[in-house]
Length: 213
Image 1 (cartoon, rainbow, N blue to C red):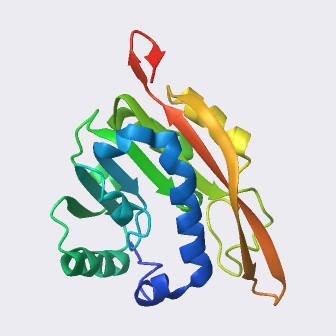
Image 2: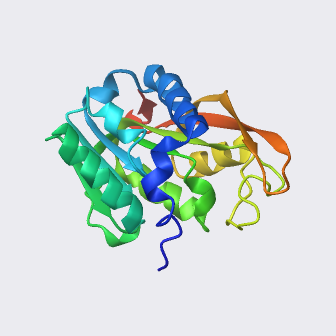
């Protein structure tokens, strides 16, 4: 599979708006995840670790998963430079990795879902990886006209939050919160500066006997 992020990986962390969007996601999701952030965490579509690496400060362990070798090279360099012993970088597709069901207290993914062709099977897989009482925090761009990535084409031009919430419920999770937490302002391929709202959904897995945390 071609690495669509190879050429951008080295400069990925130099984009101020990307850094701001990552900070906004972290600030919004931290109170929703709560004490679960002290357990095991998975960052799906981790990129260079802008979300997952800060979570290592409180988590017992963080797995950072991405399918881009270019991103993974940058990520592993950062892990080594920071001397993080509780962080593991995982290169590959989710289904190809031998991850234990129920292993994670928190799973986070930010602006990665719109790069995935088939969303429901992915959410079902992530739900299975959650421990009882665990939380899945999903952040992405709200539905737009394709300008966010144009002239490149991605599987989804953002999402309606209610559609993602419905898919999470179908995956067996309970949606605990949905909020708009940030707006990315960026110049698009046609020279027009546009605003792209970001949403965040917290979905929880039943702790026992149909209860949620």
